[in-house]
Length: 148
Ligand code: HEC
Image (spheres, rainbow, N blue to C red):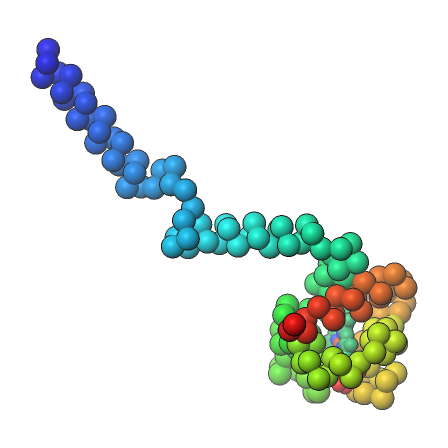
């Protein structure tokens, strides 16, 4: 009788340790990649949740109309970067360059294209696609790429 209980206990312990080894119920830790990725996406979601509407909308529009050339990070390294575009798309992380742009100029480029400010015609005009508010959101969002 006693032996049987002992065996049962051992089996239970073995089962428990398998759970522990396979990571069942393991909490995401700092050193564990999946855990870190989960923590990161929570941080991103929290940051976005606290973003003003203008920037959220700006980001949504940017990711639809601009990122393919200007890149996710705004540095001009979108998927066409260096492949088919000369000149390269503007780099919104360049402090000096961004300082040289006024809101009015960015607005003009977005609605009438880069040719309207004396540049190449490689940045298309969006004035017929986007309305005034949408363009304002984009102007604000584009300025967030500059490192603080
Ligand atoms: C087809 C690729 C492409 C797309 C899409 C695109 N751009 Fe551009 N953009 C460019 C290129 C190339 C330049 C550089 C033009 C030059 O210097 O002649 C540029 C330049 C700019 C400039 C700087 C103009 C200046 O005065 O130097 C701004 C601001 C800009 N783009 C904003 C945007 C925004 C906002 C969007 C989305 C609504 C967008 N672009 C979409 C290619 C693109």
